[in-house]
Image (cartoon, rainbow, N blue to C red):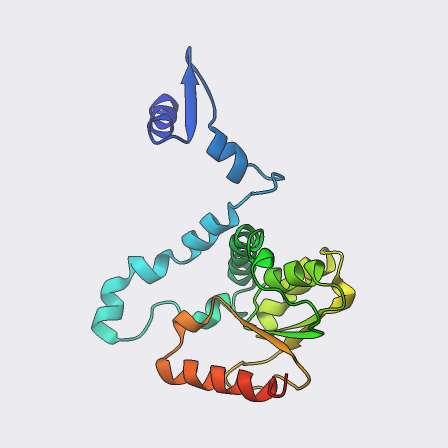
Length: 206
């Protein structure tokens, strides 16, 4: 059974096979080995946690109610919330290696990161931009994990965490830059309009 499993992994490119010995492929070595800079396996754990949403699809069709509520990964289940935030961090870390080279925030002083999750983009932008500080707004359960990531970033003194519901909570004032990333796709058109209006009003004049 192990040989069959190893052969299957080799066929899809996860392993390399030579003279009956199996080794990690370059892709696996880069993304699935703990400690590697591009380690992304928390995304697989998050996908596993989301399985009930797909495995019980028939229940959703019959009842109109999701078998797994969003709150499950937004604080209600600590382990699943942690897996979600770490998965988003890994994804953002990969994108963030490019993102800071796109927007030029030179001269900006305060960034509001709406629904910022792990705060990965804020950290990347703050590191790139002298004098910039950032506020990451998200729900309290998410920010518990965000705090760990920010504390390990080396720029924790320039990152503020603001717990709240971005549809209901005030963003505060005094911002001259805003980031809305990775959250608009799950909102209704009306909620997206509300978020854009709130962001404009609370950064108005900048």
